[in-house]
Structures are given as structure tokens and as C-alpha cells.
Length: 209
Image 1 (cartoon, rainbow, N blue to C red):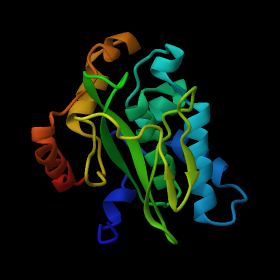
Image 2: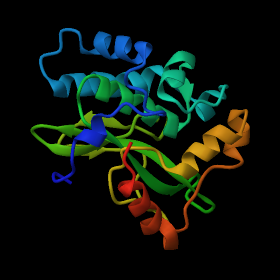
Image 3: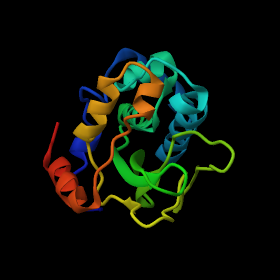
């Protein structure tokens, strides 16, 4: 992972719009007085985890996707929250990307994708963090070098997807762009069969903004 080029993970893109004025303002606010980039990264993570409400947990609309919209409406599914965290980190010149897991919702099929982040920390390297929002039974935290993600892999058919992507998976964008309410998205959560996981990941890794 340390051989990855940082440039794509600092880029302003359509969905990770790190140069949007509201993103830049929030990023500057979170960085104010911080002693180093690791402190800034933790502040950005905790802001998105704690201050942006998960769409399903809070039954919130509208469905958001673009980072600046997630910040504006203060809500989003895990995928959208990961877009906002990546944008805030990139706005602070900290390399950040997107990661995915394939999980069950209740420890039994059906499966769906779960979105989270990786951030590059100088003393650690690439480090995964999950800003989806804590609740009973979910306790994600920023404690490098140890990962403390929201969900472990426990059920056959679940998996951690390889790679750190600079842009969201197209199937995730489709899900967030095609439905008007959080409940519509819930009924149509994106998933990738294990047989096609490597194909999707390689395709996404080859994409550059």
C-alpha cells in the first residue's frame, strides 16, 4: 500500500469535491490549532462519525452522495459519509481514499457493500477508519496503528475488499443517485458477488480522476 501514488488521493473530484467552499471552510475549522496531521485526521474522522447522521440510523432524507451535500444536509449513508471524510482530509492535504467491505445486515444474508476510508498517516502508513457513526453494538474509533472498525468480518460470504480507491465504486454512485429516500436505498443496497469482487476492485483502482 505504501507504493500507491498519493496524487489521486489528494484530488478534487465530482463526488469528493474537496475544493468546494463549504468543505474548505469546515476543513480549515477542524485543522485550527492542530499540532500535526494525525490530530487533524482524527478531528475530521470524529466530526463525520459524530456530527453527520447516518441516514438509516436517524431515518433522514435527502439521500446524499456528493461530499458537499453530505455536509450541507448533515446526513448520509456510510458511503456518502466516507465521501465527506475523504474530502475534508484532502482539503487538509492529507491523502485519503475509499475502502469497501461486503457485509450482512443481521449476520445472515442478504449481503451489501459497506463504505469506509483509508487515510495516509506519516508514522503509520495507510490506516483504515470507519466514520459511519457509532450506536449500540458499533464502536469505531481512531487509534492508530490499531484498526477499530465498525464491523468485523464474521459470516461466510463477507469480505474486506482489497485496495484503496480514489473514487467511489460506480455501483455505489448508482444506488445513491437512483433513489429519493433513505428507505428506497435500504431496499436496494449495492452488493458485489464474491466472484466479481476482484474485477470491480481492479477496474476502480485503474480509474483516476
